[in-house]
Length: 214
Image (cartoon, rainbow, N blue to C red; front, top):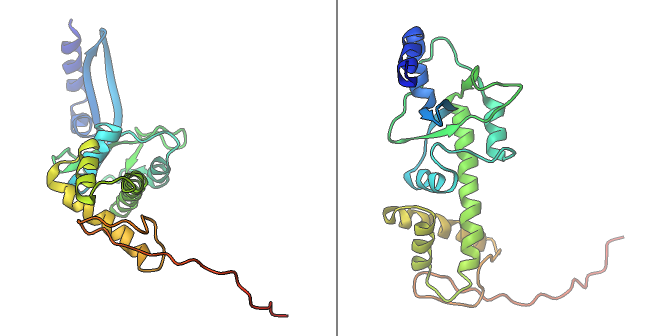
């Protein structure tokens, strides 16, 4: 009997669980004459640019580093699937994320995240994106290149379609502006480019000469 025949025989034996296997576990039929079943996943809806960035950086399905903040949040809110809740099905607009291994919460039993738990996971992903964008763009904007071209090149490098480069540019611009309005200048203070780069002049401060209060 071939491996493929064995596989379908097993599916017949656990027919009531097939929808779970099809939706929550990625199955690879045969590699080096062995069955390999990949990790259990959950699905989350993200903006297209976030999904593309994650796939480019961490694969599809997405696998966060073992000790990452994202995995810590996922493990914290994992629970057993309520009996009345049907397993999730893969859809084009959803992003599959691998549930991290845990002795305290084995993924085969703990594989459910509620709406608020997924919102918390999404927030950690957005924070990670902003950190990546800010750290790399802060260095790139020191070069003699306009912001629009720099953002477009950054998106291309990170697997984000041109259709979303303007969305990313606006996100970066809002981040920088929110600080500059409070007197915190995180970019260049003297340069000026033609594509909306603000010009700031930082005046030299003097030491505090007030006598201390006794």
